Structure formats: C-alpha cells, structure tokens
Length: 281
Ligand SMILES: O=C(O)CCC(=O)C(=O)O
Image (cartoon, rainbow, N blue to C red):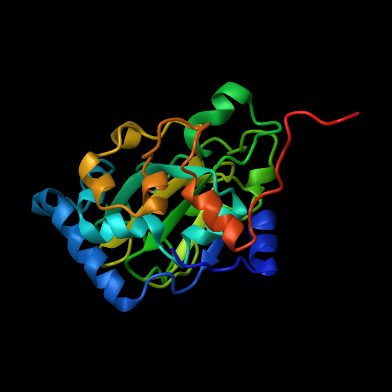
C-alpha cells in the first residue's frame, strides 16, 4: 500500500465534523470494475420486480461474500483512503465489516424505510453515550454520483461524535432539529470516512437512478469483526500481501507479530506514540 499523508486540515475536519470527504478516491477504471463486480453480486436483487411504493424491496444491504470479487478484495488496501484511516485511528486495525448498499428509485410518498439514526457497533448500548471512545472508521465509496438531496446517500449529523446524549427527535418527525443533518453532494469515486460515534442514518433514494455504495469498516484488531469476516478465508489470505493479511485477520492473536501496518507506519514516520506498561519513578 502506498503512503498518502493525512493533511492537517483533513485531521481538523475529521476531528470537528466526525467525518471527512476524500475526493477522487477511486479513478474511472476502478469505479467501472467495482460496479461490474457489485452488479454481479446484486444480480438476484436486480432480478426482483421493482415495487416503486415499497422501499423495502428496493434496498439491498449485502454483507457476506463481497471479497471473493477481485476488485472488492483490492479495495481492502485502497491507496487513497486506507492510509488515512491508519493515521486517523491506528495501524493496529483490521477490516471489521463490508457492505454493498444499492437502492433503486422509490416513491417520494413511500414511508421512510431503514431511517434510524444510530452510532455504529452498538457500543453506547453497553457504555452509554458519555465518554465514548473512537474505535472504528468506515469508508463509504460512492460508485454513483450523489448530486441531489434524497438520492440515497447515508445522512451524517455533523459534530455528533462529541454528543454525550441520545439524539432528540420530536414525535412524528424523523430527523433531529438541533443538529446539522448533512446530505452530502458527492461524485462517483469520492469516499466518505465517518467514525463510530457519528450519528448517521440510511436515507431514501428519490432520484431516477440506482444509488450504489460500498462501505468498508476498519476497527482495532482487538474488536471482533462481523461474523462473515471472523474466520479469514484461506483463499483470500493466500493472495494477500502482508498488509492485506493483517487487515483480513491473518494473524494468530493481537499480542504477537506480524504487524505489517505498524511496520508500514514506522517506515513513513506516522506510527503512534508507544504507550508503556510501566514507568520508572
Ligand atoms: O444504508 C445506509 O445508507 C446506511 C448505512 C449505515 O447506517 C451503516 O453503514 O452503518
């Protein structure tokens, strides 16, 4: 994996907003290969009849089996984004989740479907909303343009990663009035990085085209990945370079090497300050 330095303004914007847009993270050729592979995985979804008034038939959230498609496997170490995650979070990470999310056009009059503001990984259910740690970052890759409102992009509540309470949503409404809800304008190839504490929700696709994204989540290696990634696929490990092996969970336990991404971070002088177990007094 190449080294792309995290610019100070990128760190600032991620720290302030709880998310970061990386423009042009995929070139046209990569987008075309990802769409071709993604559409292959989505073939049973496209084969279903389109029911304009029933959004539940028009949303696909496919998680297992994505990495068996070559272009989706290569995305695990994508040069323009994963180095930024290693610098924003830590090199001590692995791939925690994968999702292919396609939404066919739906009626503006259809009831909100999968609209549910949340923080990722259910951590507040155990720890509460106060003093939540940053432990994972998702990369949402746009495979289509998102140029209008309500065209399928996940909504972000700006700055909500710092919130120490649940979101307050008045009865009968779907969005919180006291936070800035961002329906971002993005181009195919752009990536949206967002962290586990940032409140976000699925949104409808009221455009005329199918919306397509891939979302890969990275988390500390001591966090159990989602079930379909929990036991690394030997066929995938066989073709992985050392960094991809780490990201795919190809190591014995969290306390022993190889730590390919730590070596990579040391080489480019972006490794974390070592936290010692003991200090001399
Ligand atoms: O379908 C969407 O846009 C929502 C995705 C989401 O909430 C998530 O990845 O946690």
